[in-house]
Structures are given as structure tokens and as C-alpha cells.
Image (tube, rainbow, N blue to C red; front, top):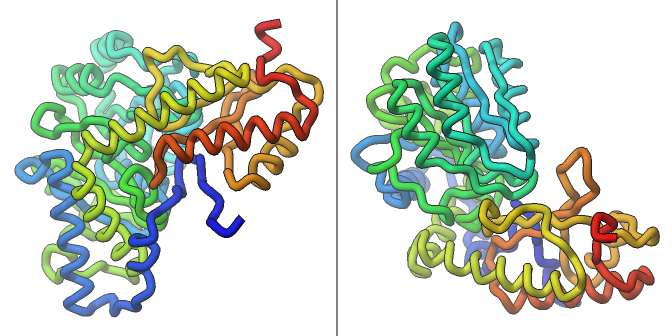
Length: 374
């Protein structure tokens, strides 16, 4: 096969040739041309969620988790109390990093196959005045659940508590409007639905809370307030920026805008999702989630019930035919995940379904039907 393998994962993603080509040039990290690229990316990011009047955006080197950790450390006072709404693996990660940074953390758990509940949050905030901040994962890609951001944000606003949103796998695809949804911080990254390459996160911080964030972070590298002040003063990053990642993101955003922005991207991913569900259903596979709470980002499927099934062999067989799948993140049930995002369309999804069919055939498995149906 003469093309790159297609990544059906929640990031890194398959990127366009234009995005790849953007990385062929070297950039000076303090050079005025690179500073202008950084400034342009920051302006574009604010426009995507209509946050120009209410928020600043602070880029940060590293994976998306770096930026989640930076957001919690920067926004939550050291004597603050964070409530994490937990319905999956990435919620648990947010709780763990909060605890590791010495902030008090309460976890409110939900089933992995359910959305988090704004009503439960309302009750929790009413009962515990010590809670200062709420952390919510917008799209929990452990299973693929689309959590109810507007309802959660309304509860936080009514109780006057800070809301930190991990929008890692939703930003640029699922609708978020800062004019309608009040949040103190929102975290996303370059290598997800904007279809850039991994290596840079960014955090939107509400202007009204920015000043009080000074000195709260116990980390030098992850102090978003310090990063913002320095960048506003000099136009530069404090420490060596991921130059090639930034210029690739600038090019990816240009293509995002040409496509029609967030509504167009959501429409394409939704077409991918329907092509995936239809194709995998024909092979007998069953999605884990109810379609009413499923985000068109990544889909968790029950593993086939056939005793010949083993994920590593299945993965290698699909990979041989040009597609990279993702292991399951659930603890109780054997599953695997297939992403709908990246620079792909329904044609590539149909090719992926065909690759899965070939993998089953090579493994001697007649159907993807799970054991729970038997």
C-alpha cells in the first residue's frame, strides 16, 4: 500500500498533504514571521468559539494533558476544591492530576455508558460550598459520550463556581459558543478536530478571572498566566515553542475555515459516523453506547463473541489493510474503538469497514456479533 495508514483514533489523526507540507520549513522561535503565525493562530482560535470579547487563549507546548494540568494549576487556588464529573478514563485522569498538584478533589462518578448529570451536580454544589471549580470532559472518548455542556455550565454559573472544560476531542467539531456558555477555562489541542499535528495545547481563560490566576501555579513551565503575560508583552513563547506544530496548525485552521468551520466539520464527522455505524452493523458489530448520547468523534464497539477473537491479532489484520484502530478503554467489557475524525470522509470509512471484514475473514470469524447477544 503506497499511502499512509489511516488513523481511526482520537488523535493523532490523519492529516492533509497541505498540513504535512507546512512543516517542511524551519522557523526561528523569536523571529517576527513566526511570532505573527502564533498571533494569527491565537486570533483564529478565539473566533472558532466566539470568545474574542470574553476570553484570552494561551498556547502551551506538549500533549493535551499538559494543558489540562496547566489549566487546573493556574486557575484553581492551592486551597481550592475541585469537583470532577467522572464518566470515563479521561475524567479519572483529570482527577488524578488535580490530586497530584495538591488540590483537594471530589469525584462524582457516573456509569461509562451514561452522560454526567447536571441535576446531580446541582445537588452537589448546593450541599458543599467549599467546591470552587468543576471539571467536565465535553466528549469523554473513553467510550465516546457527548456530555451535556450547556446544562452543566448553567448549573456552575448559577452557583458561581468556576468551570474548567476539557474539550480536547470536541473543539472545532461539537458546537461551543462562549457568548452562551460561561466557563473559566476551556482546554483543547492541535492534533484533534482541527486536524493539525500533536504537540501543542491551548487554554481559553476568561478575562475576568485572569488577574487572580497570578502566582497560583506551582509549575514554572505550566504557568499559563505567566505564559500569557510574556506573550502579550513580547509576542514570543517563554520557552522553545513547537515551531513546526504551530505552522502546521495555522495551515490546518486555514483549511478548517475553507471547509466552512465548525458546522461543516461536524457535518463531515457525522457522515463518517453514520457510514461507520451502518457498515459495522452489517458485519454484526454492536456499538456500546446509546445513539442519543454518542458523539460523532469515536465509537466504542463490543468485541466479537467468537472465541477466535483477540484484539492484537484483529488490530494487526486491520493495520495490514491500511487502517489503525484503537483499543478499548472500558474496564468491565471487552471493546475496541474506531474514530470518525481526521482528514477523511465516508469513502475512507467504507474502506475501513471493508478492512475490518477482511480481518474477520482472515481470523476465521463469521460475524462481529458480541457474546452479549448470544
